[in-house]
Image (cartoon, rainbow, N blue to C red; front, side, top):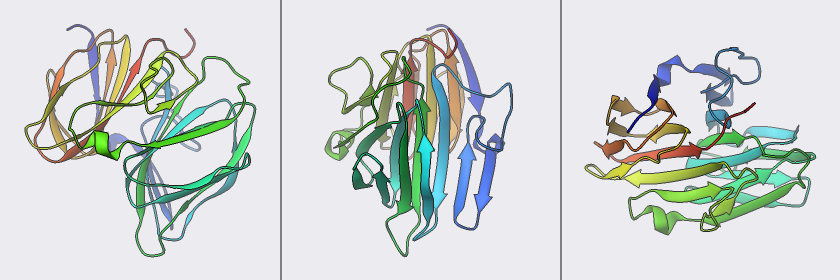
Length: 240
């Protein structure tokens, strides 16, 4: 086990607030810009969003991004300009490839309950891809407690594909006492979406905390409460 760990605490994230939205940003996003915090490895966006009932993001454009949305609670309605529409719920892996350009909207499906989700953007390994969409329910697999391969540009067994061969996303739903070993890669990003865990070499991490790994991995993570984690394994970085 080698490399460096950079722990980022939940309360240190930038926040965008609106009457219908509470969005916390792990990296520079929209009006928040920090030249020293623009990405890690290939991960450009890790937004932790809570959207009020019957509200959401109106139709807007994207280009040249692999966008993975992971719902933690509630339900999110997706609609896009290439004819896809559906409801994303916990345990559903979903990816939208913006490619040469796409329009989409994301709205809370409920009139009474908020929706909580994490949206992550990976840059494609080549610009100008054909826009696309993919989803698959992996709720049953998550119930096993181990790392589940959600999205990958190289693993054919991943639930969904993404347009970058150097990136793979894992998720795990952990009970108290469960443990997993993190992937060993040049770059990795751990996000504790829900719960509390203990990470070898870093100590206790809570909801919203993140760790950026550079130059190695293989650390053991043990859950001390019901937890849900998201881990990106990345074999290159933006700009190199």
